[in-house]
Amino acid sequence: MGDDHSDGDRQDGGSTGVLSEDDGERDDSDTPRQGFVRRHKALTVLLALLLIIGLAVGAGFLYLDNVLDKVDRIDVYESIPVEGRPPATEGEALNILLAGADNGDSDGTTIAEAMVDGNWQPGAYRSDTLMVLHIPADRGTAYLVSIPRDSYVELYDEKCERQGKNKINAAFSLYGPAGAICTVEKLTATRMDHLAIIDWAGFKDITDALGGVEVYVPQTITDDNQGGVTFEQGINELDGELALKYVRSRYVLREGDLGRIDRQQNFLRAMVDKIGSTGLVSSPSRFSNTFSAIASNLTVDSDWSNGDLRGLAWAMRGIRPDDLTLMTVPLKARNPFPSVDGVGSTVALNRNGVDKLFTAMRNDVFDGFVDGNRDLLVPDSRNVQ
Image (cartoon, rainbow, N blue to C red; front, side, top):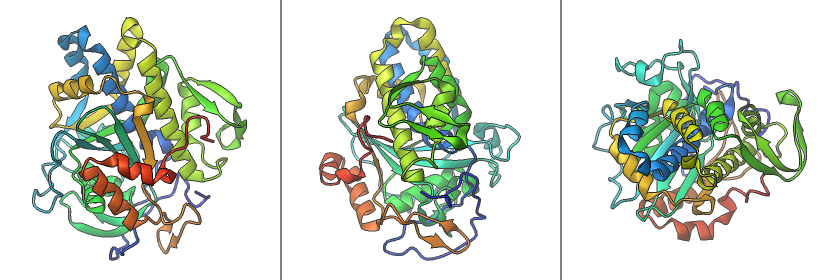
């Protein structure tokens, strides 16, 4: 996106306004400093966890449960009024809200620890990543929809009360996980059945536990904003440190933050491929290290039991990169980005397009929407800058 979308931007979330036909809603630019990892890891980690569990059910439920017990769980839905929420998802389909988080101004306390007393401290934690993972009833495919952090939308607090317009990344920072759920549900008119949050600090460990991940770079590119790191044209083997640099790059990309979203989702695709093709289960140490690294850095809602996670994972064990559709919500334009007084550079959503996308998701008939809106898809793995 341009220089206005800096990783250090912060807004106070105090602006108000009425949702218009074409706007998205609001977000507080409590923008974290290490952009992607907080933002787009939730998906990587959740899918990785599900795939690994699915591959490893034969290893024994006791071992799996011992590791899954490391996953933090929070009572995120208790403050959200039942009345006013979108209708429950029909059938076996699932919609999962994914958020990346960092301990912005906290003392290192985890989100689960911070929520024990029920008091959310605005600004203590930040999230620049919100995505919706749709898993159809047949479990044979998965769809990941990214909502850009600068989407200008109406924000809602943890009780789903309207708080005015700002960038969407303000919802998590100001009002916590429940505020993020309310904001996304109001924006999309779609029930978020579950929530998954990942601490960005675990991203490096997970990549290294996998033994590195390969991505294709179509043209040699050097990022002077990250110490002059160069990604050569062709296949690049990324360890944890290089993976962070790959997914954080922004200024050297043609479309800035939107280009970074493409990179982040491309890395996810490559990670899914690595998990599905490298026989993790036959390598006890790699399996154990990867599984533990994921579980230790993931937080989910308390409604997700170990058994539920195992069952979903087993049903999805055959998912491969070709079965994963990656896309961004419809925008008014990818450039230029409108500036809002007191908020800065924002992303304007195409409300008609957003409504059509999430109507298709609610009806679990996403393929038809995708076929007619291929411009929203992340480029194939050989064409992501």
